[in-house]
Image 1 (cartoon, one colour):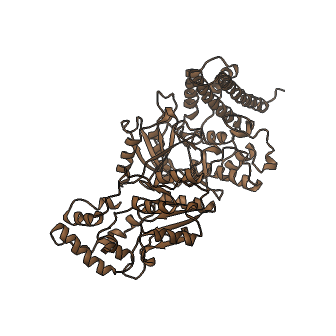
Image 2: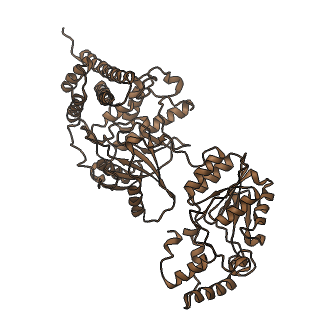
Length: 593
């Protein structure tokens, strides 16, 4: 809760505010900016503390240069003497007795003195680039004799405090003192402040200045001057595409109501460019980092999952100990951003899009694939009744329903006859396996749907639950092995078929299957080829949907032709596994004597 929430109309608060704002009428957005026209290269960034690094409750300028507040900031009077005179001033203004004992508890509270996260990140990046940082603080002594300075001093090369130096902003001497300790000329530094009088004084010495109306915007301006990014770069994101924009004002109001806080600074919105059917966004609002996943626009083809089901499965699995992102809220009201959506906490980590894991050692690659296999076992070990997921899908007829649903979706997006798909559809319906076990099924379990710890081979979260249901767990095992049979040049999903897995340290598909069965304590399935055939059939159907969409969208002719060939390539792979299964059955048939 920021300080402005504390200053609601009352005789006490009105008196405080009047004392704070007296003779300090220059803080408004329309004031002119004072800047130095010199230009870099810059070697340091100087931050004012209150209003730049931490929220500002206001400034007291009563009495001029030799007034009460100025003396206190220069360390010329004690806290007790200040409060006695301050209380008298407030009482005179309000024409009634005003207690001011809580003034310092408000001024030095954690809410007021908490450093803005965006500024913390900026300072870290500046120092990583080899530039110096400094902070100027118009502060005072506390009762324990120490100065009020709620920041981590390790962030700064130079700290200049008014009560220790006996000089107070906007006195030019305080800026000169800071520059001397940095051993820099004014033109080599940038100064950030929220008060025009301070900026004007700094600019008169030759410093380049930035007016801070809100921290986010100020950091963006600082990035432009320095020429490098100061905010945390969110991997796999891009600016929100024009066709995927959502109303930010409505979303920001919803978030503030949900989070129960009055945040400062603009809402930052990015879109994930990863292959996700439901649009997914990164949100930064003040110190909060969130993910938003929304229902895609338009009519959805079966068996597409809804965001409501995703929210339910992730919440249940988190309680069951399966690593998923923490879900915060489900909004089913389409009036907020146009479609239902749900929110999750953002978790930084690594997503490995290339299954060959370039840049890693062989033992690291094997460890990652082992972790992938183990976390799949964790999904399939969830007790459905305990997790409240017994009705999450129909039990016992997974493949009959799945094959029919995917056939329906393929027919809805079919643009031409593909012989391999026609043979495959007929074959799948005739060779449906008997389901041995029913578990939670992810529906698209692959390496690039896992979020890994940046420094350890630990799965932090399993992503993209839109195809999840109850079903045959071996369907997920087969899905996890798709990349083993695709070439590394395959555009939609990079593969491993042309890689030396032994040299890379990556388990073969057969090794992954045996590893899974060993950990789950089950015998290997004899009809493994059916599961692989179905997995490639499902991917071929998805690619066919992409191809049909490209025919009506802005894609080029070459792109459209290529997407059609991808469907045919995938369906031929699926048919290859159907043939392998046919040979296996034939070999196991009793020989005629």
